[in-house]
Image (cartoon, rainbow, N blue to C red; front, side, top):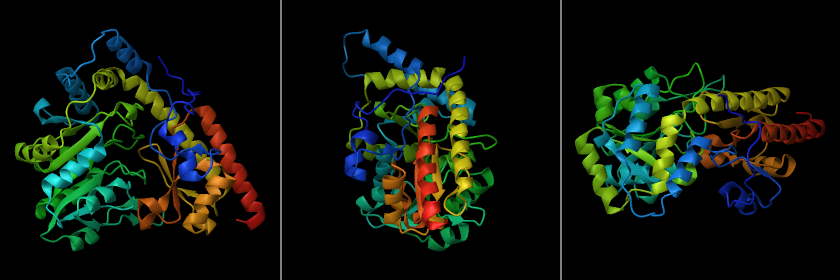
Length: 397
């Protein structure tokens, strides 16, 4: 069976965040919203069918996450990513950001230091500063070819005895890197030497394009597993963010108990009945759908890449290894960040995420979500092409 992503259901009248917030965020309804990281692609039919079957039972009371749901995820992780977790390692969470906040509170004290690697998803900053911890920025290196690398020497230089936690984004949002084993081993070595725990946000781990391979940080070694809290889930992979279900995997018992002290205090509970069946169905039946999706997403990215190549003095497209978030290097347009954002809103009629929101290293960049249907992608390309063509004629870019 093959899946068709040429069209998708309309969402403008469904209270979808990316549509309802257009006026607030962009000052107009007349933009295609390609900012927030959910897909304008239908959630898989096998997930929706599982939910419908559960609705045939008339009682919607409290429910524990079923063992079978955790086991489906554990089996998926082992088969797809080569890592084994026990069911005792697994905890429910309604979001990765919530899990990150718990980890920061559980594993650090007021004013202790937490490392983030910028540019990065904005909640990485907010979770640290809101908890009154000291934010340490270890900027990624931007190479001449447009790729990003860890800056290990800078990381080492910024660590002291108050540094307790590193927030790892893997695959990386927004730059699209899938970290290689040797790169992750460098991070592991530094963290082991300095007694630093790693919170690994691996929510995009299933959205990786060949020949790249996602390496779970906890899979690097037994010692790596001992210092890692892994956040994973179905939200990005199967367009299920609205089910508000993810998981945390913590193999080390002491680390898990420290995490659970704060987790239980905040009463995460067990989520909703419908989320449980949707989650299990996705991991049980999702492989073929996901493989077809990744082909579609890569095709969308190629269309965007071809367009950017028409305007090499305007936009350079960072190579994508994972995620469905394109990182556009717009520095060639020689616009300040506010003006750059206005270009996309007013001229291209597209609502993107401003690069500067991911840290100062994102100045001059924009993030674009290309997880849309083929029909919508062609419309997106046309809007951007028209805007860039008009600008080229007027500014000779």
